[in-house]
Length: 207
Image 1 (cartoon, rainbow, N blue to C red):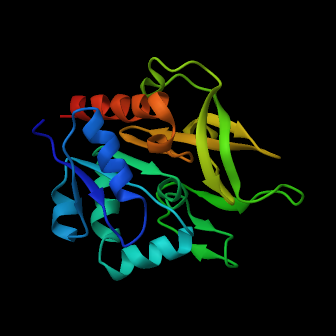
Image 2: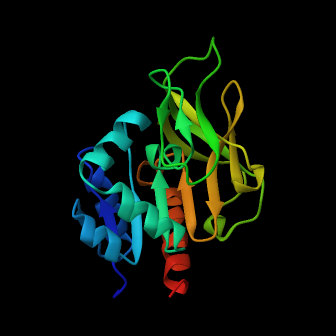
Image 3: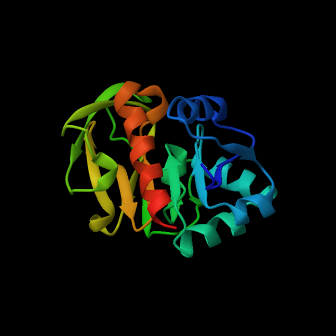
């Protein structure tokens, strides 16, 4: 495959698991923290673990924020995983208030009191809007989650998948060539691999 699939390395995240998942599907990818390579990429994937604020701070320190935002705003294919979804919003309530990338207006909120956090394990994704990323995946399929905060975008048309955990929250966000999942496809078996494959097929059609 000639298209450049670039996995953003900001010093955290389960990068090797994502590389291995793509390799199982026959895709080659490059892991890099080089801003020039990120800017030149055809397709970006940002896996994430930890806190959204810390992730943005690391991206800023490594001079990756500008290239990544430029990539998304110019309509190139982008897939965010877990924290990679949350940082697309305006900011996060984790640690008080931390600014995120503000690609889409919205807040990252803590789960309601009384719910065990982190939300860890398998949970269903309800397909609230048709999207090619769900091709071949039944509604209410289970995927693997690990997170203590959830994305709450202001524009509900961005939400193509929802999951319930004390509150209904956005578990799949999509707009144009940008797709992001709160769950970890690389830890979600064959259906998770299909999410990657569907996204990369969309990316290939983006030219």
